[in-house]
Length: 34
Image 1 (cartoon, rainbow, N blue to C red):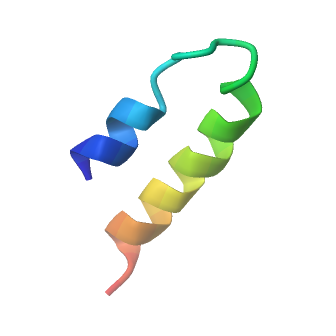
Image 2 (tube, rainbow, N blue to C red):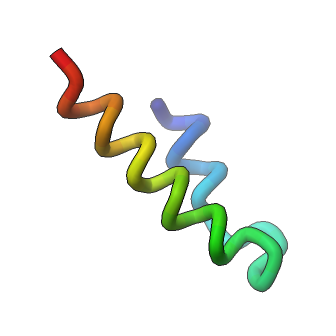
């Protein structure tokens, strides 16, 4: 979990911007999955 959250941090800024939203949704889905 923490690794995913760390990944969402702006490492490459511009490169990671579109991916951060996708990964955030994935993290939320994992958290709310039964």
